[in-house]
View: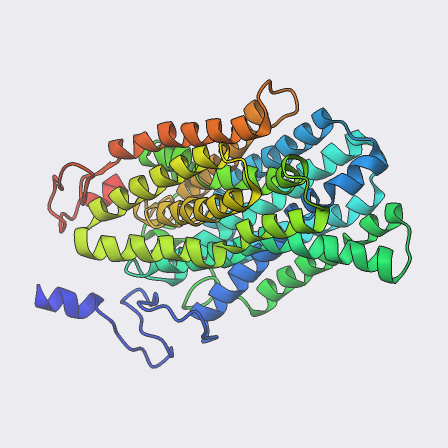
Length: 463
């Protein structure tokens, strides 16, 4: 036992400035380090994904201005919100196998470079149909989330992978908050300081996120590295024969029920977060009659909380996993997401702006931490089909956003926005329950222990 631990415990390789395990994956996490390749990959991953979130949610804070210029109806706005998530569903499903085949670096950068011109084309929108189409196509860039989480799982060992995933996604998700603050300021700069007409100002404002996204993609290609030992090779990740075809990897992932449950769970933590990002600025603007800058600032605080809350979810997952095993990770996810659902119910029921902002802040902390906790479990589901499981879970997040947006915020819903927010909280409570069904033969589940020997050499067949 002592010999086994000595092989997998922290090992200082002369090639790295950070402790690694026998797979050369980092066993420690230093978020303020730029050491290559582990921490450099971390910073490139979160920054690239940050730019994608910034682009995707650059439209909502300027929606009141765009609505007047394009004569958008509530139905148009609702359909556009749904379209942005639908695009993300399909691209995330495809991104998982793409990472398995080409590696996270090339898959991520390619998608960012392909969608950056779409972000720029926002300047050319002239009709409601064009508005919906652009939002649909921009949504594709959110698939970079799957590549980001896959990349972290390639670079960091199981003892810190939840932490790395939480920080990478958490810092990246701040982009959805900062764009709520930055885009109105850019728009105001053009209209107030440069005296550019409103209908031109909002259009040229989108040049900034397009350039930002393209630059980060190029940085990933130039400075990134897929694995600790260099270029991507699938056999290095899976531990299986390189002759294994991609179809068998995809089918192996799709047959794993744990991936489907995590997709459902993620749909009602991250999916709810995406929906809230889409509607929160307009909600405060219309219900509490604050101006567009204040509404943007409030909405920004919801997204910016990710820099703390999602990493905390990863930290909790790793700490509870170290103390209680997989049972600790599962129970933590269930508890945190249940509390988030209760806070979401409360958010729709408070009637004063001050209390509402306070509840929203608490809700943001818990719902985002739940997302971090979810991806603290994902890397343990399947080594062979890691990309597929990541894609399934990530797609579940955007599918949940489509469901909540369509049912509750599409413009045709019979419920008020505040009532719809509370109903969204109820859905969170219901769809958190399937976590109780997750069971790992090697590590157990929420209510029972493992059923096989941890050293069973045939266990890889279950992966």
